[in-house]
Length: 151
Image (cartoon, rainbow, N blue to C red; front, top):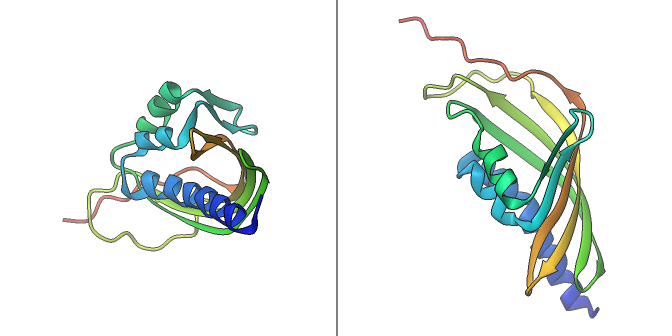
C-alpha cells in the first residue's frame, strides 16, 4: 500500500473506534451494529459474552437501559493496517456511567471501567467496518444507580 492509502485506512478505522463510543453515549446505542460487518462479533471473554451478527448486535446494544448516562474516554488508539482490506487496533477506554439518570448533572465519581479493546477491521465494498471487537476489563465494577434527589 502507498503511504496515503495506509493513512486513509488508519484514519477510517480510528473513526470507527470513536464512532462506536459516540453512538453508545450520545446517539442511538443499537446503531453501533451498523459499524460492524454483517457477520461482526463483539465479545467479552471474562464475562463470557459473545454476540455475533448485525441483528444480534443491534438487539444487544439496543437493550441498554434508557435511564443510563455514560461517557467513555478513548485514548491510545493504535491502528495497524495489514493489507488493503484488513487492519487491527488496540485502544484504551475509561467509562463513567450511572443508571437511574433523570436529568441534570451527576456528581463526579470514579470511573466504572478502565480497559482496552482489541479490534479487527475489514474493508467491504470500499468501506472499513469492524469485524471483531473484544473487550478486556482489568478494572471494573457494577454500574451505580443515581440516588434520588431530596425534594
